[in-house]
Picture (spheres, rainbow, N blue to C red):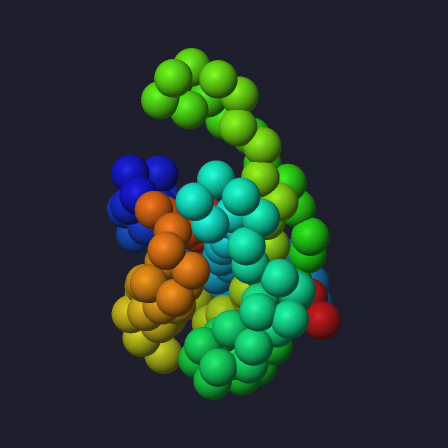
Length: 130
């Protein structure tokens, strides 16, 4: 949560990037969704597709990318924990569209539906070309 908050704070203070020919300033977000529930695999690919259809797509209809990932960190008992994850990449307009609210709603919905402690987010400004 702290990293996500820092990411949003820093986005507000970073100047709009100067983009090259054919590029436009936009905002990107990466969301990291752990797939374990209670320390065991629990969120299937079908579960995540349903979550994408019901929560992500309605809020970000212009498109998104879903990647398979894997994370690791030290747990409370100082033992290494590994977990499969889904990484969602979003490219959004730099301003408007109530993006912060939508990102927060998606993160909250996943935590509630799949009993998660957190959904990590990295948000930044970028130059984008299609």
